[in-house]
Image: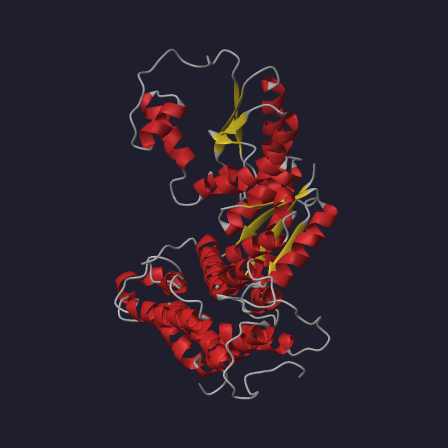
Length: 228
Length: 256
């Protein structure tokens, strides 16, 4: 493989370039694969039990296509995200495909450059959130992946207002997504498949919010290099 | 104007079955399925949706898209987002998958435009359930003498305006009764035959109050052999229209 994957050198990298974007996707694929059974169990409890398997299949396909020398090289972060978006839409099979796909597709439209700064991170997360909300027609507090994406976008915006550090901005976003996902545990779902369960959905973390926390944490891990 | 259908389902067998049903009632309408994930399992895939849309739009001027579950809807919306030209020639409708597809297909068979085919699919939801709205309206009309519009308002629990003079007199109305001959009555295929004939005539016809251009309304009558139905029409073509429908029912649709 010509481009760096998650197994390349362990140096601290603080540049949000094309290599970072590709590492993000590879790291997300590895982390979702590791969490696949946990995600599936969450979804089995309050959904139709396919979230882990579906997202794993989709991100595997993304990693494969990123490593395929026959596919044109990416020159901007947006091109990486667009390839990931269309691949997820084609291969995930469940609602996570169009939701993550639309998030990354909208994000790709505002990241069409070689390197992102902190305001670029904010733009990426805002666009992704907008895509999720538009496609899923969910608002915050309904026990969906919006409850991880929205605090992430808000945290990034807050931090980017005080620093130019892309690492700090991403870390704030990932931490907020993690907290947002955990906050969904006691809630009753009113959107998506989990809403069919009503009160019985309380006590289980929303699988989409959990996978969002994993995917956004992967962006930080990709920034710092492996093992960080 | 030719309008085709694209059926987006998690299950290839489900989509194929609905396509078969729609095809029997609307043999000339282009119907394409986008069903299952890329490996043939349950799910939906952007690629399959894009292929089906492209294939349908090759043969039809416009396409009505029906989806079976939430994530199928999301996949169609994603396809629309990726290709800005698609929404001008295709419409994703909010309709029950089976009834919506049948209603859309029969309406498309009659040569209706995109707007009308989409509306037929979305109105099909009213035909589901033991008490379709139009039946409630009929019953209320009979009981209270209200016009159907007022009865519908009453059924919806809203304020009813003070009754004015009757909107239309029964002067030009023509009615006839006819006995159903075939064992299964106005089931899907005969209902489609009647609906197509009435649509071609261009006159308003009802059968026991059901709109005779609507396959679903005709099917909802639940007629069987021996039932006597009343065929009613209005306007200059009324006599001829009633005669055609009576003739079809009397003929037993080749099943008697």
